[in-house]
Length: 550
Figure 1 (cartoon, one colour):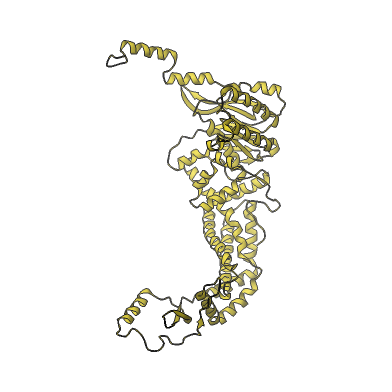
Figure 2 (cartoon, rainbow, N blue to C red):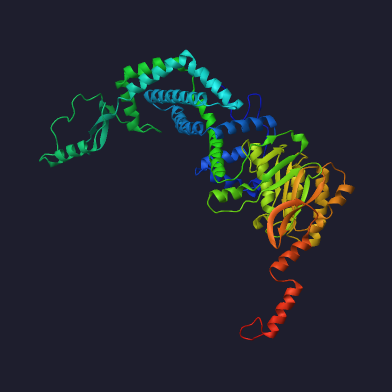
């Protein structure tokens, strides 16, 4: 099989930047992959594909279209799941074939199994792709390849030869063995008595044993078997199982006609390797598991969409109905989380957002949602939004609060500053930067001082950014930074809403409202000055104390 991939077009090569462990952790990628499959090796396959950030629109669109076909044709997806099982067996079989110590008969039988699975997979892929109106370039090319194999005359002969040989080999159901003992009743020789076309049955063996053990004399005169095959002394060969080594040799000799027939017929197909098909296993797992999960999300009434991919140089993004995919996971799991949709865009007018709002007002949730939107889109799957237009980023860099164990040597501020410096050393104007409560672990004055310089540097860099913070004073400097610092990506204030003391989790571009947030919360919980004064008066008069105590 030619080099073929469902992740990369024929004229494209992998050209990605690997996401850091910190970014993977901050975006909860492992947690998400665990929801797609219960098998750890599949989770790792999916994660390893996603963390390789591809920004080439051609590669992303190629993947997106393949995924779209697999998602929209459930029957095609189910057939591919069946093929996955066969390909997985084929991959295990490959290890046996590479075992140079295996006897010729087992090598031939493994080769026969390889070709048999190859025939079944080619037939299955051809049937499933032919019966569906696929649109993607990737699946069309796969269809073209398997159709050419399926329709050429050699495949028809291969199909018949494999069928006949499998039938012949399949007639062997059991082997009768004879064992010679020495004076100490230790086995010294073993031989094959016969190859049988029926398996031994447990009741049959048990009844023979009971008949034998119930006789007065437990030792039979003469040999217990007729037609004993040539005996091979069990030797001690380093690295080999003596018993299996001799059994393999005897089986090969007894099946000399079958072995010769196998060699003759299989020699016609030396240029065919079924193992090349196993290269598709990780890619099919990735597409199938994501398609299955997005189907669950849609069935839960949650919107997902196929993103439009535009030139990375534009550094734009337009999303309607954006939400954090982790909330969709909670809904699918039956936890009933409320999903709040938001509209957000990145343009040169609004490209660097300083996001403020109340505690637990959704700032971290939205920051993470933006990262997952780009990650999903550039992986080639659907995105958590009602619609999305995206200029791909070259990488995602996150700056979330660190594990306390990592701050022992440098201290919190030192560790945060070091990571921030490293991000600016790697990021380009086509990157995505996500800061979550950065510099909140130091004093307000120190944090604000450093944060102001960071925002100015972001303006110079020009990368799309979400900088969520409690420092409302930082957001107030947006216009000043735009006026005094050179750059083509403007800084804007983004706030998470609150209405009548309740968090709405809706975002909008506006100046920070730190004081009004506090007033709403204070009023809701009865801690404004007027409310507290009234409470004191009620307590003093006993109106608020049933026992009349103060």
